[in-house]
Picture 1: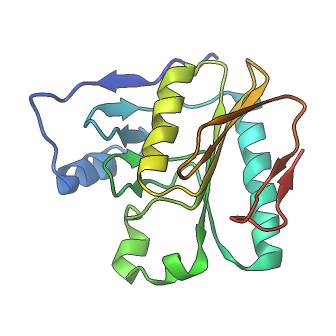
Picture 2: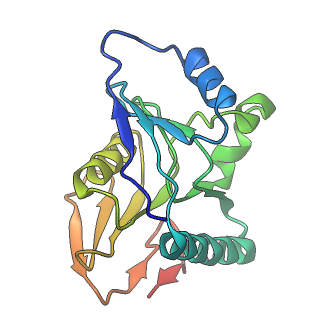
Length: 188
C-alpha cells in the first residue's frame, strides 16, 4: 500500500468557526484533519511503515527524556494544537513546558490544545512535499515555537526553527541538541 499526499481544500467561501472545525473532526475520527492559518482544510494521509516506525522512535526518545526530567508533557501526532496565530496543527511529536500545560483548564486539556508547543518535530515522509511542511513550521514559529526540527530524510537535512532567527540547515549525519528548550536532550 502506498500513501498519498495530503489533500488541501481551500475554504475561501466557507469560514468554519472553531466549533464547526471541532465538530467536523469529531464526526470524522478516522480522517486526520488540520487547518492552516489561512483557513485551508488539510486532510492528512496515513504514513507508511517506515515513517510510522521513525515517528514512534522520535516520540519514544522525547518521552524517555521527559520521563527523567519531568519538565513538561509529550504529545503524539494525534494531538491537535490550536495555534494562537491561526491554524490547527498536529506535529509528528511535540513537547509543552509543564507550567504552560498546568495553566490550562481541564476543558482546554481535553480538547484541541489552545497553545503552540514549545518544541515540535516534523518528519518528512516519502509522500510529503517540502514546501507545505516548511509553511507549517513557520506557522508554529509565528505562534511562539521555541525550537522545531524538520527532519527531511529525502534531502538528508534537518531544518532547525527557532524564535527570532533564520532557519538553520544541517546535513546528515547530524547531532541535534534540545538547546535551552530541552536541556540535555540530544538526537543523533
